[in-house]
Amino acid sequence: MCGIIAAASNRNVGKLLVQGLHKMEYRGYDSAGIALHQKDQIAHLRTLGKVKLLEEKMIQEKPKSKLGIAHTRWATHGEPSEENAHPHKSNERVYIVHNGIIENYLDLKDFLKKKNYSFLSQTDSELIAHMLDYFLNQGNSMLDSMYLTKDRLDGAYAIAAIDLEDDQNIIVARNKSPLLIGIGIEELLAASDPLALGQLTNEFIFLEDGDVAELSSDSYSIYDINKKKVEREISKIDISSQATSKGEYKHFMEKEIYEQPEAILNTIDGRVGGDDILENIFGLGSSEMFERVKRIQIVACGTSLHAGRVAANWFSSISELPTQIDYASEYRYRNPHVDEDSLFVTISQSGETADTLAALRYAKEKDYLSSLCICNVPTSSLARESDYSIFTNAGPEIGVASTKAFTTQLAALMLLALSIAKGRKKNPKLRTRVVTALRSLPDIIEETLKLKETIIELAPEVASKDNALFLGRGIFYPIAKEGALKLKEISYIHAEAYPAGELKHGPLALIDENMPVIALAPESEIAEKLISNLEEVKARGGTLYVFSDPTISMDVKSGKLIKMPKCDFLLTPIIYTIPLQILSYEVALLRGTDIDQPRNLAKSVTVE
Ligand code: G6P
Image (cartoon, rainbow, N blue to C red; front, side):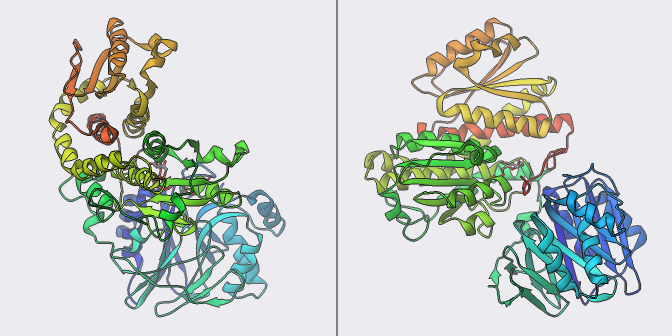
């Protein structure tokens, strides 16, 4: 969840470390800190709150250094405070930054207390600094001390550490938390996210679990879990600064909403050809594997789970397969029964969500036919550990609330439904229809984005309320859930979603003039039933905002009926998502919340 960055250079590193923290701030932003080696001492600056405050402190104090580590935090153990902010130190000698969770921290703290170490924070991370100091004091090198420390740590970690007695080297270690090395010009860098280093290099090495590496300004050495020196592949990735700047937009979320036509185009580009889906777009051998699939198990979290719920419907109607879907955090704990020839599918924009990754690792021990992931980050742990994968090609998504990552996940899941249908020789005509519809999707999204002005008009009404109810039926119920999630994430308005038919089984009791009801009414066989459900709301004084097919007419009294562009029914969930994203954004703007970095949340949840 947190972001870590480290640099060993021939130039001053303070500024580049803070710039890197800014790029990773979406991972966590309740406090930030930096430790800079200055030969005879280590400058240690920490602030509660956003990276900007640390930057201001840096501007005042202007610490100079060619070797340093820095951190932006999302609190797990211990409240957000300056004492709990990283880097943590031991005996003014060892300074560390850590991303992850140390599960056996209480035992290790007891051990260190008995060795006369005292703790200044409530974090699990501080013990890593003391443990390194403990082993260094026994005459071990920093590399050996890191291995000795690692041997005692249970849990997930990406660590970077510096030692007052060594002004040339940084040591880093990875286990189940993302960490990579960046090879710069006359400098070596490490970070938990390539975005942090995008301005500095396009050459990256993704460390593996168990790896420890030593970095100086002109060289690096990597050691594997058994302390054997290893060479790891260098990947060239161009992370342009354009992709990580807001451009003309006020917020990344806004930019990302309006990037969706292009993002969707990039998801389908090169994957459909003629009037059908192309072969092996999920990796070599995937088409052959799809011929055998008899059941699908989806596992995901948050917005990605909503994409899975929509897709379950497509797997049924297009691929003619049953689907089971679970929250990643629940899946392992329900003793899942695995049917023969079941395909295990994970969906994740980051590819680093701890629960989803843990579910995949668990599933790999079971009797699944194969594992497949839908992901936006090709270099992520999930992508590397799955048998097959497809990348959504949405480009970096910085806003914590997922927008283009979600709609591109839906497009990629549709490609999966079509590919499996093709492998199983099902529904050729329907496949052609959907492929044609997919091609026109970017244009329809472009048209849908023009609803902005209409939505801006109704935003103040929603912004003035404390609650909202979202209704949808069938394949639109997960979209209603996604709309409610978006609104609560960024505007802090309490929002819930229901399948409209469930209204009279409870939520109708909540309806009055203070409960805006946002409903999705596309043309479908249940449209009429949905309209009757909405009449029930109207009769009880609720204000209705209905996004509907152009053919549907109803009197919404004080609310608003907003006609949506026409689209193939199977793809309408993607289209109906767009106005809900815009609505949340405009409401949050009116309420003055921190849209890109909503309180208490993080983009990449790397703790279980
Ligand atoms: C966090 C993010 C959400 C995301 C969820 C799952 O909560 O803020 O936007 O939907 O994690 O993340 P994933 O990367 O697995 O899609």
